[in-house]
Amino acid sequence: MPNPRLSLLALVAGLSLSLSVAPGAVAQTAPATADPATLKIARMVVQQMQGDRDITLNGMAAPMAGMVQSLGMRDPERSQAIIKEVVLPLLKAHWDEYLDVTAASFASVLSKEDLQALGTFYATPAGRRLAAAQPQLAQAQMTSTTRWVQGLMPEMQAKMMEAIKASGGASGSKPK
Image 1: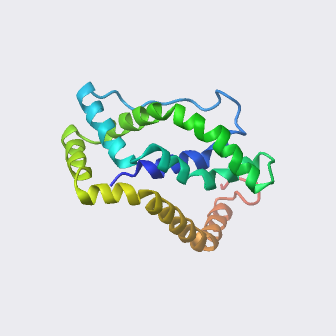
Image 2: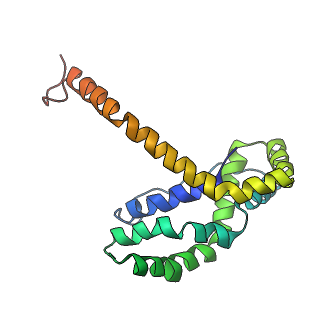
């Protein structure tokens, strides 16, 4: 099942990376335009999946503090204060834009019928429980994925080095 909270967490994780990129250097891309009825259903589904805006954003405050610390604020308490005073109000002010962009993405991938089925599911008690649990699920997924990739990293690096050497890349020369 798509997880817009995970997308939102990925966005936040990418914020610190994008701070080092010149403004306008990254092209803005929009998903293909869907018909208005499909977009309306997609937005409803995204809202159901997100649950309460304030709970969702407040749950991300701690991970976002790392972004502030990467900008030079070493005091963890002040970093959290900056998130609460600056970042969260900005995200809240633009929440509808986030819902619209996410809905457009959903509508470009899922059919109107699939979106209606998701809406029906999220209206059930199980769907509401899933929506409420998604912040914890997203964090658990990010943690387990990070651990999984870290476990594969030594083998991955060794195989990449072998491939680079086999292509002549390690010595700077091209294969003949």
